[in-house]
Length: 139
Image 1 (cartoon, rainbow, N blue to C red):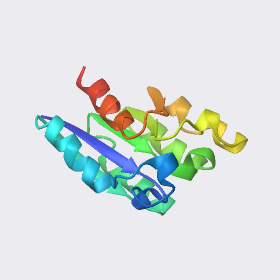
Image 2: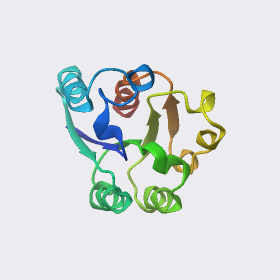
Image 3: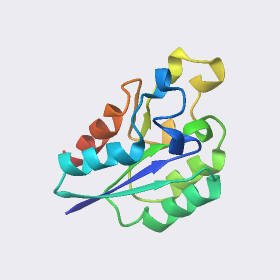
Image 4: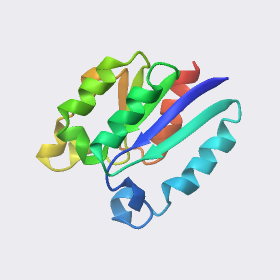
């Protein structure tokens, strides 16, 4: 059975409440149940934190034994060299996901420190991006 870690960064605990015109009306916990029903053959693990170090700790803990990491680092995407270094330090491949199209937003969101450390990036497709990232790891 494949094991995939889904990591969400700061403020993503507010999905469903935060800026619904940008991020939608569904909480990630509800969407995670949808993912579990779509992929019953996959062991999905989910972790969210508003703290950079906690996310790095998860990457270190699971990044040598999982088949994939789906990461939406939120605002840390654009600021965290340490998070990028953590992805580089482990053997598990990652796919970067963003609910909104970061390239159609403020200029500071156009750069990602993570992209070069990931197999690819999915942005602007809403929560569907997580599903597509999981599918990538099942190929």
